[in-house]
Image (cartoon, rainbow, N blue to C red; front, side, top):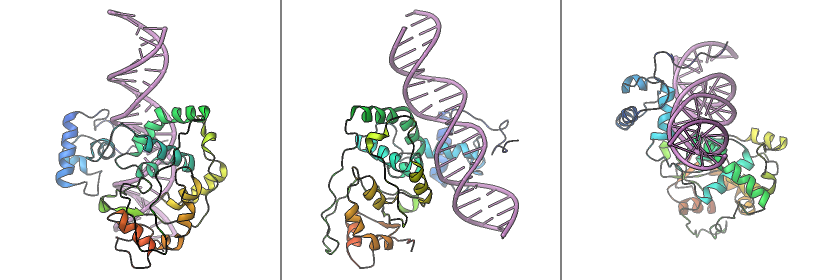
Length: 264
DNA sequence: AATTTTTCCAACCGCTTGTAG
DNA sequence: ACTACAAGCGGTTGGAAAAAT
């Protein structure tokens, strides 16, 4: 006996969305918002669809900030590196790629990137190029070099913090070593048992200092972050209007100007 | 040109997680 | 502490489009 479906299948429409339905959902959400209740939304919007289906359609397709296709080399590298570090946690990976959804990243991985990773591993080509250098910042200095657009800090997009950048704190547990890129080959690759254990301990985010210590090829700044560890804890889940503010807060003892929701 | 195979991605399914009562 | 419900999430599937034969 299976779980009861969220909607009565016989009474709601299923399958591909028509342009009219898309427009109906889009205009309703734009006028009234989600209202915190997807289950009730279809009826209010006059749609003969399951709320779950509406939510998926909006999140994966209709949202105005969604990007489709056209993945850049940089995005490929982020996906490859995070997959090698945390496995198939698509929502976390997608959260580091503004405009991308978990479903989209998952499909992209399954259809294209996995093959590319295998090909790259077997040919020995460098699929994981190091990013640009970090800002020249001394923890003891209050002068900050802004690096807006720095791909190592994704703009964190929850609705209430739109346009802000999140500073992630380190976890307290250690991640197991990440296998070298060359070992990524093979469709069945998955994190090692040790890595899986570490991943299980991961809260609900990928913390940048983990990346600094674990995926050196993409985030070769472990020492830099280690020097800021205590400060990073204080700034956990702080949101800043720009990179300069964020680096400035990390480098000084002053109360951060950003919007903070600290874990400590 | 017709048919078959492969690729791609939107959508579904059901389990897990979070939260309000 | 427990229950019920909604949202979040990742695996899987169906079918359309493209490529190959």
